[in-house]
Amino acid sequence: MNAPSNYVVDAISANNRDFEQAFQALNAEGLAAVYTSNGMLMPPNSPIIQGRANMTAFWQGLIDMGIAGVEFDTVELDQVGDSVNEVGKFKLKTADGSVADSGKFIVVWKQEAGKWLWHHDIFSSDNAA
Image (tube, rainbow, N blue to C red; front, top):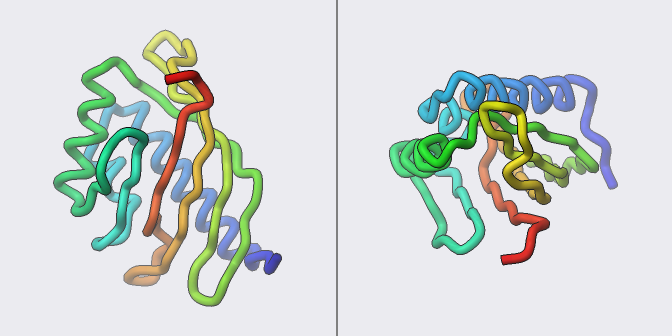
């Protein structure tokens, strides 16, 4: 495993906090803004979602279902060339702070315009289908 530099770790942490804050603000465009311009969102039981407009629509759908927050826990970061692989856990929360879902994720990070962004994002629930 190649540990990323402190700069990269800090940039990834800041972007994850931006995502959490966008969820708290119920800002679907802000959620989609953490992805590269040609990024891929791969939620469970769905085809691949590409394009910020499509990602915004996906995240707006979750907001409309009552999801009002997310909490991340990074388990591992591994730098491979010009990308970083992140493995972690998540909790999706409702407005009252209840946990609506929890699971795991893998995000492949890439730099775009000097900023580390989500390039490939795949996640799945720990709950039974």
